[in-house]
Image 1 (cartoon, rainbow over the protein chains, first blue to last red):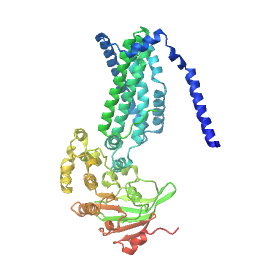
Image 2: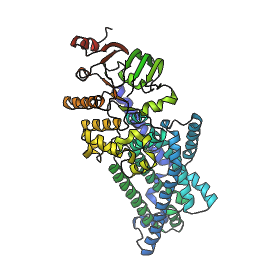
Image 3: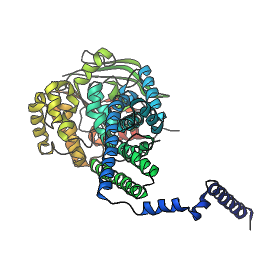
Image 4: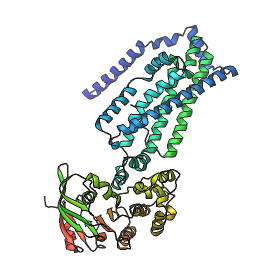
Length: 261
Length: 247
């Protein structure tokens, strides 16, 4: 065995040991001996409750989650659009204004949605409005940054042609920058919608409405059959929105799918 | 009709001088081709005529206006039709919108609404119909730019450049990427417009001696400097123009 092979084996063994240490640390060995409650929970989740009443309640929660995601997206867009225009270098906004917009966008996206949700639950009370506001505020900062990057990275030649034809800032934006960036702006919008659906599910756990709140409630009431139905619904919702956005993205010719940082 | 004057123009991009002391004058309605290899300063000179690019020294005047004067620049540009190198149309845009996109100052409020509905802005309707018919692109106006061939895009770009009845027409490498027949047609379209009733001042840049041969006046640039200003170059002069500098 030469030195290189030896060090490779040593490195692999080290990685395996670190992995085992982490698995032991999180208590994975306890999976082998589930207690009665654990077994009941697993059984319930694997046998979803399809009672019409339960399905109605889960359907209502799913609709609420979608509403949180869509309303949050709408509010985020209203804030993100002007911010993105100010952030983009092509807007030629004064440096102070751009710095202010950059700082605001960073502040908005810098705080996780869950923290915003806790704050908004305290401010507006339990329910979907708190979730919507949390999704909107974080999404506004994120979309502003990603949209601004797209506006800056368009093919410069049509933009230059518009400028050299004597067009002002607004016509250059409307006739060159936005048409060039549109597919990717739309792609990012759809990606944000997917994120909102996933996030809206999680936020419910802290009382911000939707499927998450129903999941939290069914866990507290040991209603594991309903929990199984809810988990399946979350999966169907996320996959459905994902498939829809993929189709729309392909239809508009978006050539990128930027992953949020 | 617009006359041009460039005196002692020096344009510098970072560390390199792109245009180095160029002098050239054009009478109204005159046609000029600027010939040179890549990096000779052709595009920079064209941009300087519209007040774009970092000028170090020298004077440029277009008609009675100075394109480097911020108060004149917009008027100079609105009186100029320009075709940029390598396709400057938005690919997913309809050809109709692309064709009118250089004349947003003529839209008026009703024009923007018409455009949003996919129609031609009313103030430009007759002119677009006339130009599209002349260039044989009427049937292409409702197609997307991305669906058009290189030659068709070039004709739409020409319609866009001519839509505002410019006194000055600038075309930067208008034959780049076209086959010889389409390249000849594109140059012919520019020349026939310039020499026609409108009598437009025309400046075309090219690195193709065959294109340059169609013009009565050739301005040859090498490393940013004028090495020839006059009738067509001889074969020997062309060889000399494109010869690599001795290291």
